[in-house]
Image (cartoon, rainbow, N blue to C red):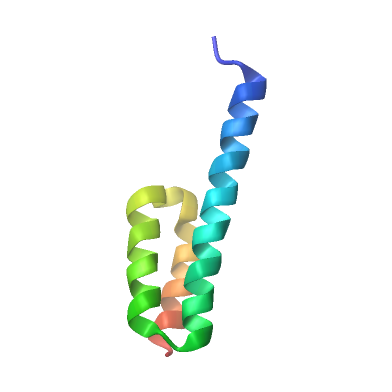
Length: 66
């Protein structure tokens, strides 16, 4: 049986990690670092997959506009 509290803590940790990675990609975009942002986005997609899909699509569009 899954411990609900442990699952909640795990989900919160994953969300924090994802938010941190997305913020780093956002910072690269703000610096105009297209290659860095693209590399970070690729790593995010590889690690988080569908969990990051909506943010990934938005970041990809912003990177393409650089």
